[in-house]
Image (cartoon, rainbow over all chains, first blue to last red; front, side, top):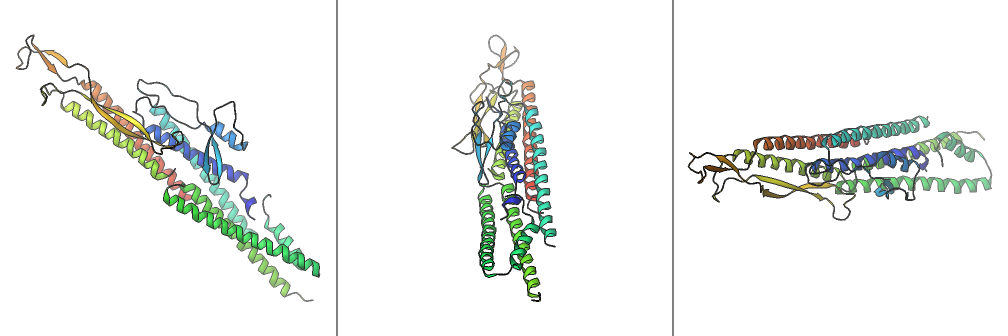
Length: 133
Length: 100
Length: 139
């Protein structure tokens, strides 16, 4: 009955929140392993992932690497991993400045998605309240 | 399905109530019962989903935002149902006050 | 994937860096130790770290903790310093000293400290994100 309320935009925001959470976990892993020999940083290709979500891609894009599928609230989110392999610095491929700036940037994105979704939720509730008049 | 507009729903419901006649009544009964049953079923479903998510979160399998979203969806569904119930009651009272 | 696992990873990062700093302090403290129980000068110790996935099944998806793999002795030869008057001097007048270079140690100390702080930042940001997610339930 209320399925229409939680429309496309709602679902996209929900998925993007999930994506940025996953990206956060990669960055946290990278930071913990800053001094691990031969460690390669992992990251999400945000742009490609977003495109995938917007197109509601269900097929695997054969031109790129397979999207990694995450189980997120009963739907699968196609995450595309970043191709950036990092620069060799003598003992591993991580750069601390890059990771910190990714950390901050991702956090900002996360906050934007959450605040936007929150606004939508508040709006929906307002509509219901007012609609009862 | 598109966004639900409560006005449209109200009009639909009211138009069914105001029309008289046996057949219409039968159709109305069927339409109503199913509509309401469906709505209640879906709301309790959402409640169940939310509870599931809470347990998963406690176990460490679901993330906080997933659980919050599930809770919000449950609440919104419930509020819609309550709104519809209130509207139905209002409509019922209106009819009861009608002079035939 | 949840916040507890994230905190475990960050914690592992902090712990490893802290232990590394301990090791650097030990190296520096023993810079002039000419004889250990083995009879030789103190040998510089190094820490080797390794990453360890949190879940066993899929290492692409999972978080990676850092663990201390082992602590090894630096195989670089000892320093030979010409000090013929020294009681430990050999027949050529050289004394063997620990293979600890203070500049290297201090540099590593700064790197470890920066890495430690990066983990602290990660912790703060993680906390912010969790609180933000909770906000979503409150309106």
